[in-house]
Image (cartoon, rainbow, N blue to C red; front, side):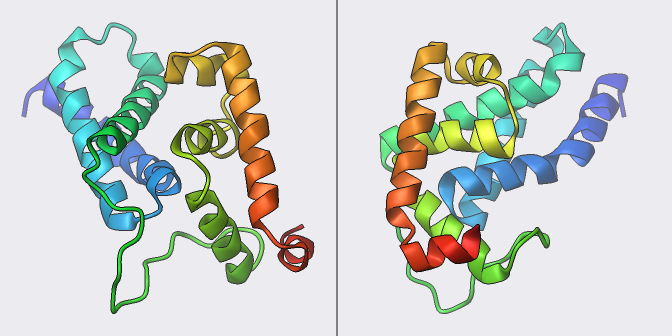
Length: 167
């Protein structure tokens, strides 16, 4: 295995699960999230030799993931809802109850894609306004307005009874 391949394999091994979690929050489907991550890391592998700043790989990978997600939406390859006989996979255990998590994920899935991308990058990935603007190739003002609208949409989607539980 070459040094290039070893470095890529190490990065993939350490960051693929975190990127899969981010992808799930964007699309709401674990299988599609895996496809997004696979496509993202394929693009990353192709560009690996052209990337000068390997210390900024997370930002580059996250940006590629979001762009791949938005690009797939534009093509209309995926439907918003899928019927299935099996229960959905779950991510690792987080704070709050499973019911709270399901309520939030269901509401997040109903937020428009651009607003959802901003919410995921700002509040899940904990990026600053500036970093989110760079990742989405938009102005900082757009990030702020999309975040405000996305949060307002989330609040409107969660009923008062659910909101009390989630808080």
